[in-house]
Image (cartoon, rainbow, N blue to C red; front, side):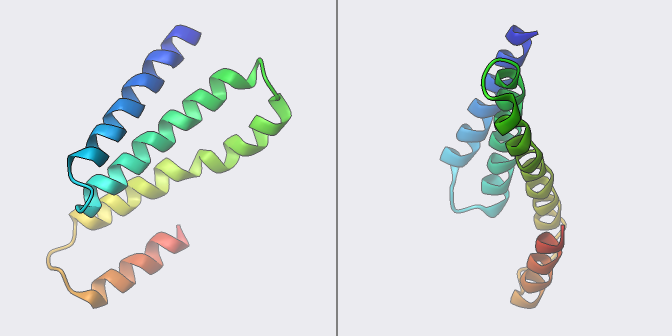
Length: 99
C-alpha cells in the first residue's frame, strides 16, 4: 500500500509542479496546481501518519483535505467565466471564500 501511495504522491506532485511551471500567470493553471499539490500532501500525510506522529498528522490532515476541493471549485469557477469583468471576480472570490 505504501508503494501505491508513493506512486500517487509522485504523479500528483509532478503534475502540479509542471502546471505551475508551465505558465504561472494563468489563474486556472495555478489553481489546478494548488489542487494537485494539495492532494499529494494529503496522500503523503496519510501514508506517513501510521509511522510518525499520528495525532499531529491526524489533526493536520483534516485541514489539508480541504485544500484540493476548494482549489478545484475555484478552477471550475474560473473555467465557467464567460467574460473578464471585475464584478464577477469579486463574486467568485466571495463564493470561494464561503466554500
